[in-house]
Length: 251
Image 1: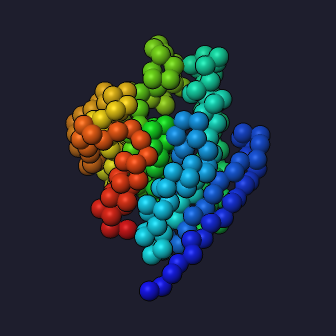
Image 2: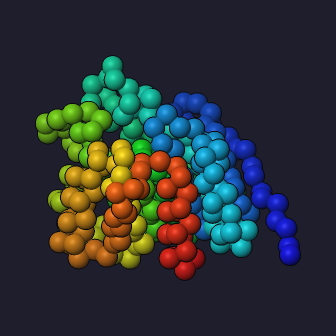
């Protein structure tokens, strides 16, 4: 039996949008790049530390996927309690620009992969991956969002008619997204959104079901998968869910 040694690269590059060096890790050597957004307060190391890379090792060893785990600036954006909602959204917008204008080209350069990529994450990372997919479906052709909250009110409370916050509140803005370019990209994408019904999953359920209804009404094929009441908002379940869904994608 062949024994693989997992290719791990600890990378960093300078972000002009954020004015700092940004670290990210690469796990794997070939295949579809999967861009991983961390959970709240998490780092670029947590996906490995909590066993997600090990759980998906078969796909990595077969050269089907490679993971790029990003760091976040959530503590300066959505989770920064002393900032008002608009300023949090502004800080997040700089992060979005970092991802699209700097991290993605960097990953292309590292891999020689120039097609669409996948976005994924758990909890806060589930929110980030789905939010960035909705805004850039030309960059991301696949998304697997696990246990996210998709309503910006969860971070900032009622936000009135603030356009910038609205733009980053998927369960709100999807209802008014009627642009043919976006809708066609969504229809051609692989979209998987999963939640459990167990401990700590309640926060995400209203926006999960709102997204599900909007995709049904707009005839956008998407898999909104509801797991059982024993399925908690926690890594042991995400370690089961991620390889399960990767398996279904025929990568």
